[in-house]
Length: 65
Image (tube, rainbow, N blue to C red; front, side, top):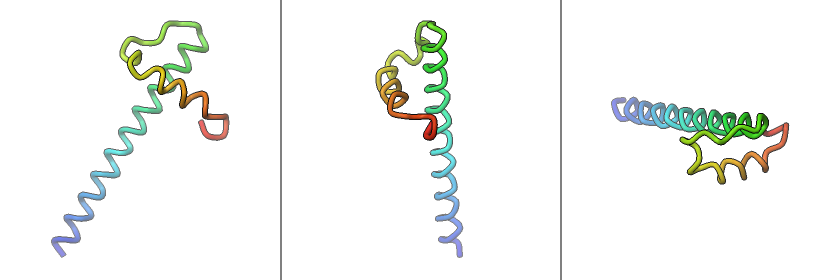
């Protein structure tokens, strides 16, 4: 019983950490999209990953965004 609860706790924490990463990725993509649409410069905190995120944005369409 204790092993089961430990396993469930680990799985829960792992899923929660993935949610945070996905949320961060979504927010970064949103910031880059807004900057590109408005013609503003890319935020400085995103300049290192901008090329990779821009590629992912280009691959997405309206159904997958």
